[in-house]
Amino acid sequence: MANEIENDIQNYSTETPANDVVVAERPVVSVPGAAVGRRKQAIARVRIIPGSGSFTVNGRTLEDYFPNKLHQQLITDPFTVLNLNGAYDVIARINGGGPSGQAGALRLAIARALNEVDRENNRPTLKKTGLPHARRPRHRAQEGRSQEGPQGFAVLEALRRDPLHAAFRALRTSGGGHGVSPPAARSMRSR
Image 1 (spheres, helix red, strand yellow):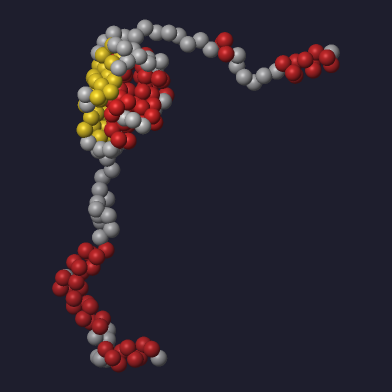
Image 2 (cartoon, rainbow, N blue to C red; image 1 turned 60 degrees about the vertical axis):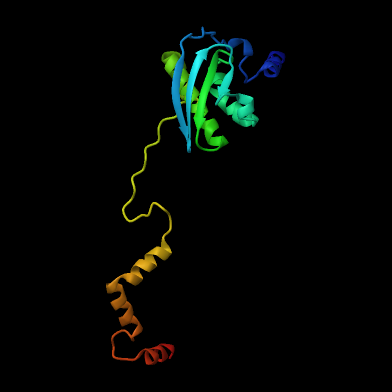
């Protein structure tokens, strides 16, 4: 009995055997799709066509347009998630923004196009991985808050020009309106 327990402990594993995982191969839908993706200041318009998996970005290859391997991996991520590598040709037009924003815009556009092509199969998988992401609502401007950032100097200039503020400043510098001259008021404060 003790021998059996010892053998069971040695054979015990928390990992699931690899042969239990079954990946269902699904046919590639032979329908073209198109979408727009935006990130930061970049806008990407994408058409996906069933083909060999070639990328054309602004008339150039993906490797030529995005030499950074990280950007290439980011862009091809929607195909990798859906196991559709090499299933579609991608034709993209990108303008605005920098390389990182353009790569993000292209990734989102590809995910949206794949979602459009086969919504019932692709959408749940894309949603699990965060693609295509939900639009973030634009926050309204809060009252009294500047949209351009700190405006300290501009506020002081506006106060200097304000006649009411000028009268208040005159009262303050003249001794507070108590009939005492400014030098005498200063000497009284120091005592």
